[in-house]
Length: 186
Image (cartoon, rainbow, N blue to C red):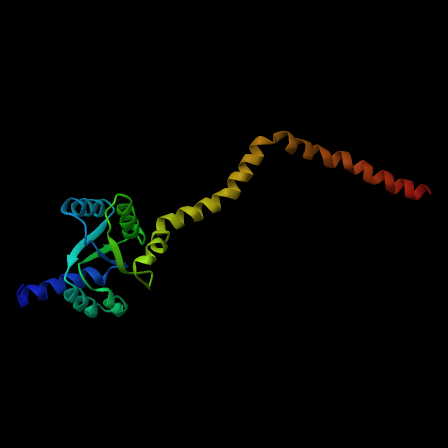
């Protein structure tokens, strides 16, 4: 690779990383060509940008990105590296986890998301369990709708109770007057 080509690759990686909110670096070592192709297809389906990169070029690109100091990830840049960029925080982690079920063994080197660094493959379960923005919004909407649903179902299922309550205060008023008249009589 010529120096000009390296400069272009660094610039492309920098542009990719500049707007990225979710960045994973993984190791696909040990996967055959078919498994790697399948991994790429699944990444594309899950809107995960996947790119095999040279460690030194990735490090230089990350050093040039403004606003984020990726230096915590640099020690993990050994061996084969694949850069994974996504919009959904847990999409790359779930992708790696699903591939492990099929016998392929991609390993997580490091990740940066939600302004936090995750270093090492042992963080994969933590990353896979992070809820995406859409999942959190869905939960909040569900929580907000729950009391409304309960109220509506209570009103729909118990019309007799509402009618009985409307009649009950009329029946209770004379009872309240009776004890008052008894007290006055004594």
